[in-house]
Length: 204
Length: 204
Image (spheres, rainbow over the protein chains, first blue to last red):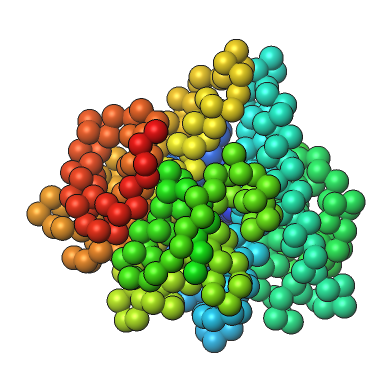
């Protein structure tokens, strides 16, 4: 199994954490959607990371579709996203908010990094960042500091997506200690667990 | 059941089509994420549409999470997204490509519509649009003109997402007749089916 993408991408890292949590061996080809454009597009016509190439040669794209497959293949009766009902809805809701926060954080980052300085429209960046902070703050209210995980008393995809979203928000300069303190405390704890610690991207 | 969002949004319309396809009665509150910001944020901290308020009062957000619930609640043994295996992966792959195309098309549109003219960075818009065209072209190759639907010989979420993505691409000025002719022919046919025709947004 081959994971294509860099762990600096929250979407790629979400898949890498999920694979580690399931104990699935995999290789990783650390390609970036910007600097390795042609290679990334060969695996995904959209030009996004991650992609996951299965041993059969089938290529899956999009972190949501990939973790859906991993849940089916390796999740047994306790997949990281529960199979149905209120538990599934609760985990998918956190995942949706946190992946949406990543979308917005990256829109802000792309605008800043891939637009000439004189064309950067700061109100758009501020607007995106405000949406990120709102989403993190909403998930922050769900964190019970007495519990080891966000939901259901066990590791779920809610923790995985909240972890990568908080990490990205901090990476683009948002003050998550102030804006989402309980979530920040949770991600510090999670970093001590192998699936999270082992996927930390190299410092730049 | 209350659907919040305007059908001009491909994500909202995807949910509206899914509800109609399942024959689920619902009301719709046509709010826009830009002009009705406070009301939208009251239902989704991210400030995105759609949201779906269930009769229990529980609010679901994100079109992917919403259609996942609708499949479980109303899909019986033939949900629009198959429950597992290769069929599920195939449908989720088209959905991921088409929702990603919508993300990119809207990034291009937002840049054009919410940035002062002198700050519009055309290469970024061109780049987003190229990704949209690539994704549509990839799905175009999957269309068999002799078949009524994209996959599995029946209506699936692949058709729904391809329909809304092609519609959006055309709406932002991409030439889908030239770039994805088989997909364009499919969406013309689908428009004749009630779930698609009945959700057409008013002309502006």
